[in-house]
Image (cartoon, rainbow, N blue to C red; front, side, top):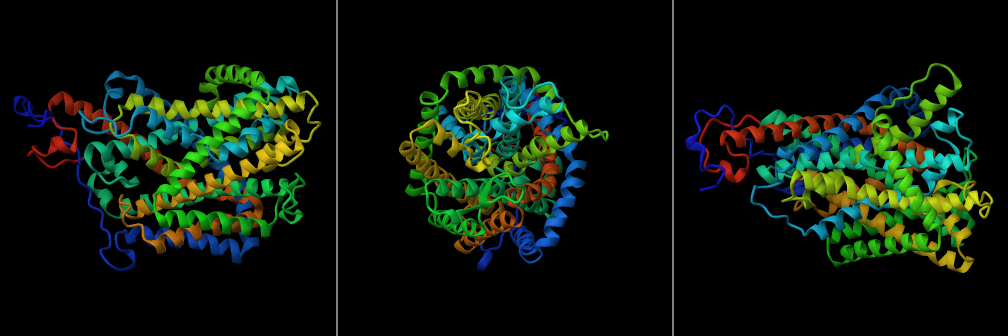
Length: 576
């Protein structure tokens, strides 16, 4: 007899039922949509297709609408994003630190982890280093080096030694516990019910503790559609950043002046429309072929190559760059981040009509609100991956591993790579060559100043290769996640025509938006598109808290808490 049911007869009148351990999701059993939920797949395709058609055939209206949205809708919901992420950090900390909740296992009580701790942490490390790191490792510290709230308030001089410390405080804010607690909570909400209660590994299952079997029908379909659209838009931002930097790298390697054109805002050079189209054809084409072939030797080889090149690039900056300066920035920045985290997480700038207040509000919209929306839009993608690999971990080990390990790696990247760029500018060696170029080109500019021209070209080529492999693996994984959601938690339904559709959809979303209004157009679209899923994330937070608390009550009363334990239970039907 299962240990969870052994003492049930000794308890008198348990006041709580076992959890729901079945969730039926209708999928089509033949034809084009065999293995897929048409109630999720078709609406998701329609919404994404309409967005693409709007951007391509009505570009003026699309850009005007996005500009209005940027100044109204986004500003209206900025507080929602700020306070939601702060709440996610707090919930993750509470679940990990309380002994009773932290000791609960993501799976049956006697479950052992599927992966060794080293392999698990390696996969989390891989999730924490990606396209965003390559773009923002130099771009964000340099941006805050010349403009941050302290500079706007007039307490610090731009591009001065005094501006470095606040620059890293705000950089760490955006790449620390905020994003990774969002990913951790989404992954925990999915993995907890999937591995303990044998529910489908999909977004809607995470809300069963709140809404029960009602998630089988229309409400569940809506949740999964919202997750699919958010994933497309979140990955589109990553793709947009990657394509811009990929083209900038090819330009640096001397493959033609046609690759770059003057940016409309005068901020430097940006990728030309032709370069964007050709880059997307190559990158998304390779990603789609990879997805069609399945997760085999090729994609595993690419993942290993990503890791090796990433460590190599980091080592280059540690030893050839300003390694000691970067380590000092890491220590000071980490201290400032931890000390100011509570206040920074709850700070919301609002305009009172003065220039300083207006500038502070705009800075927060451009940076913090954008990041919080991006992480939330990316959460279905990353969260489902983390949930899939974390079976058998305790909640405490899970939160510490998911929230801390990638955060620390992001901090190390920002300190060593960005610190080298800042030191080159402060010492006068760069002479403005790094600061005056666009964000997508700043990593290459740093290499050009730091290294001999021949060596810089070789390393820049390796960065382009690294970008290409990250883009291919990211899009491949995104298509897999989307098809898993559409397939009610099963990836066996991933048919080639659906893979082709989502590959083309991603390329059209990225290409049309980049040509329409650059990366800003994708950013604005993503922030708005992430709003519905942010509501789902808030419900997921409530659901996982309820699931954990009720399981503790069940354990106290001798009521089973897992699917295996419920096999011998014959009480009234479960309600949550």
